[in-house]
Length: 382
Image 1: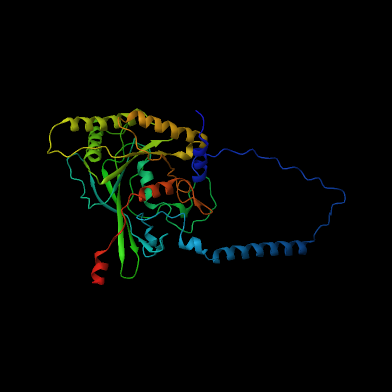
Image 2 (image 1 turned 30 degrees about the horizontal axis):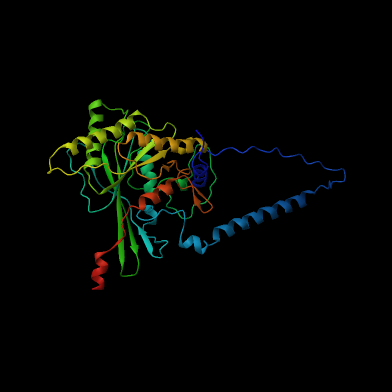
């Protein structure tokens, strides 16, 4: 399959995938002439030379630490996610300036509820948009959810020294409610609702709040559980996706970038569509209309695939999704992410955040409604 050059250029720009190695040029040996200066420094001259060199390096490091941020970076950072994504708990009292000129106070993440079995009531939605994460077991749903909740929050990330097999301290996830992650398939056993909120401060007396929900669904396919329990998880997911209503704005279908769509993915989509078809055929007006929400593909573990193969997998995933859906697939773009700390998020090079998580955060934040004025600010004005 030929590689789409525009798609490959986009992949290189957001920094996902394994880049193509450039051939190394062997350094040419310098040939010294016989007239080369061969003077040798004595011990005292050599000590003075290295002391001066070390002193200059220390001065440069101090100047870098004391150097203030430029006005463009201090006002609007291209590496920060837009509201309503919450900040780290250490920055709860800090205000960040948005691109619109007003201040944003990012609130901590909250778990507003969960559902364990079919028939259990889901948490009430007060008009907030919801985005659900679905996928096969061990595809990286919970890991990606944690990266979305807490990734790319530090405005002062710099290139740090890396050690093989270790994650720098500044790139680890902060404290807060997180989804359970494990290499063992089937650890997510319930539907969990995470609320993201941000308080937008326009003036001293005028405030607004924007919020949305991220929903972690159990995985389908192979899991370390009995067939009955796995089927109950599947029925619970189907009930939520098809009967949640208009509040469910989008379903992110996570696909492993190394393998593409597999049989469990196709079976899951087919089961959803068969339920929609059977329930729409019934002439019972008392039942609510069942619709399949928009589905957007997200390729995970992109740091394990070369950039050229990743461009081919995007085209292949689009074709597979169009073959599985009975309706026309939506025109939503295929997102490419890596949930590895320091690679997929908290990976800043210059003025760019690499890894694809920031692009997905921007895509989800676009679904959040425009902020509404807080009732307290309206009462104060009156």
